[in-house]
Amino acid sequence: MAFIQLSIRLLLSGGLIVAASEIAKKNDVYGALIASLPLISIFTMVWLYNDTGDSEQIASFSKNIFWLVIPSLVLFLTLPMFLQRGIEFWPALLASIVLTILTYVAGLRLATGSIS
Image (cartoon, rainbow, N blue to C red; front, side, top):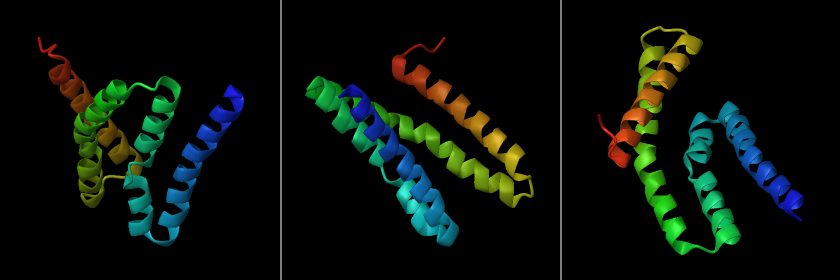
């Protein structure tokens, strides 16, 4: 039974990524809409609750998602900036990912109070 549930979870999650990229080929706004929906977070909360039945854990998880969405926005702000300045896709993506990781590190340090 666990294998079937895991397989369903993998298919749904992977299917969302494929759907977003395929739709984006035809209409980038609708592809972006699907990618921006918090479906993975919702699925994760449903599966986590199904596995644990712990509402407090879901509340904490949801709040943490909220605070960690903020650093992820760095990618979506910097990537278009780099591309519009003529930087090639791969270096622009890499630079955006590095900036996003640095923002996550700073955000996690702030969130956990481990600023040194």
